[in-house]
Amino acid sequence: QVQVVESGGGSVQAGGSLTLSCTASGLAFGDYAMGWFRQAPGKEREGVSCIGWSGDSTYYADSVKGRFTISRDNDKKTLYLQMNNLKPEDTAMYFCAGPVLLTNNYCSASWSPPGGPVYWGQGTQVTVSS
Image 1 (cartoon, rainbow, N blue to C red):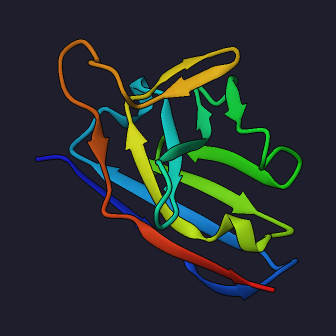
Image 2: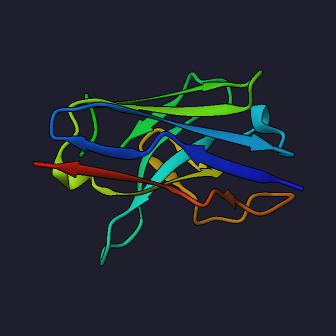
């Protein structure tokens, strides 16, 4: 049974930092590209950042480039998102998902991976006040 669990969300003031973590059990974590997505109330879900299985390839949405850093520890089956200089527009529910489809300029969880589904966590709330 696959379980994906996010943690690390919270409430911060603008300019603050948070680090999100995502642990995935029951999944061949080290074989897959993984990603972070977010959804604000009344808005569509958007891809924030993704990382290839080895950590060599990364994708960032333009809105978070230079402020967010994605990383992974395959031994711990854990995905991270370091978020610095947070802005009120970063307020959203953040989700971890994988496997994701990752190319040079594109990352998506809206696909059908060979051999199984895309797994999602329940999300962790990030609230940034001005």
